[in-house]
Every structure is written in C-alpha cells, then in structure tokens.
Length: 412
Ligand code: HAX
Image 1 (cartoon, helix red, strand yellow):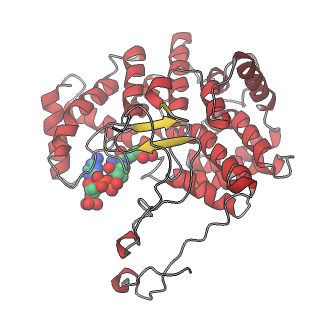
Image 2 (cartoon, protein in one colour; image 1 turned 180 degrees about the vertical axis):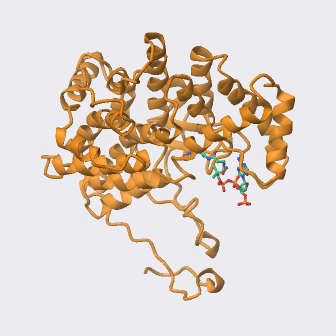
C-alpha cells in the first residue's frame, strides 16, 4: 500500500495517452520532466525533498533552503557556512534602490518586484552563471523586497542588512515596519519564518515555476527567467490569490459583524455568496484533493500569535463551515482550505496591513524554489546538458477550438 507520509517516486513507463481533451486544458496532467526539489500529491500534500512540509514548517528557513538546493539537511558546519554566504551576498547595489525611487507609487508592488529583479540582473557580475545567480538572488531578494515596502510606502530609506541575524529575522529588521512594537515585531518574525518555508516551492508544473524554467530553456539568464516567473505569479488565479483572499475575509467579517462570529452566521453568509455565484476565496486547489497542509501549518501559527484576532477567528470558522457546503456541489473537486486561506489574516495581525504586498512576500519565498529548479534544468538534467529549449506542439486551426478536431500524431 502507498505510504501517505512519502511522495511517490519514479515515472511510469507509459505516461499518458494523449487525446484531443488534452488540448486547451492548461497542460493539466501532461508529464513534462522531473522535479528534484518538491512534489505535490493530490491525496498527500506537499513534500520538500521527501519531507512533508507540515513536519518541517517550523525549522529554520536557511536549513530548508539548503535542503532544496543540496537535497540533504545541512550539518551544523554546513548550516553556519551557508548563513555566512547568504549574509555576505545580501547587500544590494544602491543603483537598484535609485531605480525603484523613479517608479510610480500607484504601480502594483509586484510590478516593482519584477522591475527590481531586472535591475539586480543588470548589476550582476556572474557572467550568467546559474548557480552563482541562484545564490545571489536568494541572498539579495529579502533586501530588495524590504526596500520595495519602504520606498513605495514612504517608510524611509532602505535599511542595510545585518550579518548577525537569521534570514527572516534580517528581513523583518530591513522592513522596519513603522510603529511596530517589539512584541509585534517578534510575532512578525515568527510568522515570516513559517510563511517563508511554506511558500518556498510547489512542484515543477505550477504556472510561475514552469514559466521560469521555460524562459531559462532558451538560455535566458537567471534574472530574466525569475522575473518572467514573477510576472506569472502576479496573476489573481495564482500568487495574487493571497491578496484577493484577505479582501474576501475582510468582507466576511464586515458582513456578519465582528461581534457575531458564529458558525451559523458564517454558514448563512457563505451560502448566500455561493447562491450569488461568487468565489469562496481560500478554498479549492488545481491539484490537491485534501486540505492544503500549509493552511493547517499557518493556522497553528495563528493560534500562537493572534488567537483572538477577528480575521483569524473568521479563518478558523471558514475552515470548519465551508468544506461541507462546497462538498454538496459535485463540480468542485476540492472543498478544503488552501494556503491562501490563512496567510493574509496572519500578516494583517502582525502589522503588514496592505494586502497589495502579499504576493511580493510569496514571490520572495518562491524565488528560491524556482531558482533551484532552474539550476537543475540548466546545469544538471540529462547528464549536465540541460533540458532543451521548450517547444510544445500546437495544431493549426483558423477557428481555434470550434474546429479543433485535430488528432495528435507525429512531431511538430
Ligand atoms: N468557490 C467557488 N467556486 C469554486 C471554488 C470556490 N472556492 N473552487 C472551485 N470552484 C468552481 C470553479 O470555479 C469551477 O467552476 P466552473 O466549472 O463554472 O468554471 C468548478 O468549481 C470546478 O473547479 P475545480 O475543478 O474544483 O477547480 P480548478 O482546478 O478549476 O480551480 C482554483 C482551482 C484554486 C482556481 C479554484 O478552486 C478557485 O477558484 N478557488 C478559489 C480561489 C483561491 O482560493 N485560489 C487560491 C488557490 C491556491 C493557489 O494555488 N495559490 O497560488
């Protein structure tokens, strides 16, 4: 019997019989290659190098990043050397901040993020070495992300990184959220450590990761590939769902009233939304058919840092009330909470009150997994030759789907 605590390995010999139903299906279920960092399994959840994410969610982010890059946990010495290397590379050229200052404040933070990665790439001296760029990006991305918050929201000049702090401790230091008390700052650190680990990687085929690897397959450099990946993450059906989800939870609390947070009131409110054909944000998944383990993980952090925060109470009520309601609709494949169901409410509780920034935090973390996967595809796959340039087949059909009766055969 399959072990529910471990991901399946080894691709079957016969992968898929292609039919025209596979066309215009967003490549759902179409096998493409191997992912060496993580696995998403419909009935088991997410694994990083074979470790269930829920079991390692509270470990040091540096250790988990090391795991994704090296496929093994670091020894104490390796861990210390890795932290020193991250700290040594964390400083960002002032020219990156100067270019950010010229951007329009109303531009979405993800557009700032994409711009910053592009400019970082222009300052790179690695001559396009994917491994060097991977480490540089992982080290510098928290510095750049913190600067985006500070410059776009006029919090003040970017704060320099400190080499004596951990990866996420340093990020929170560089954020310097105005008016945050020391206990609130400590809560933000607790949350960001788990948030970072939870978002690092999500298999090989999610939109942003696949896009990044596709762009890299033409031998675009790491920065060009990651900025393309981040443009994919910016979409509301992908990374930006965390922003939409917090707006939804805010709306739910406003609708039932913060003083009336009962299961019955929430049940009635959700049923009304579904009757009005509205989306219940934070529920459902394209691959998972069980509750997203990252949703549970983040709720445990919420119990620790903000158990009485009304938005968090709503997160818990929704997790209890929504699945049975969605289950009664047979077309919904997954009625359970996903990662975005809880993250926004927790960030809000810790003083990061602008939902527009949440996708940038997701992008900061996910850069790690995508960069690690690009290193594999460019430098290690096929005995070091790398995966060839991506070139899937399209059928010529002037009227598109209407005449899409093509039969898949041969190469094209
Ligand atoms: N609320 C309302 N309707 C839903 C729903 C939800 N939470 N989840 C699924 N459905 C609907 C779909 O819109 C679809 O309707 P149509 O047939 O009319 O198009 C139908 O049920 C079948 O969908 P599905 O097969 O269960 O799910 P998909 O693979 O098509 O979509 C989504 C997966 C995550 C996009 C979907 O469940 C959804 O829209 N959820 C709410 C938004 C959300 O929380 N997104 C974050 C996902 C986490 C993530 O990946 N972040 O990056």
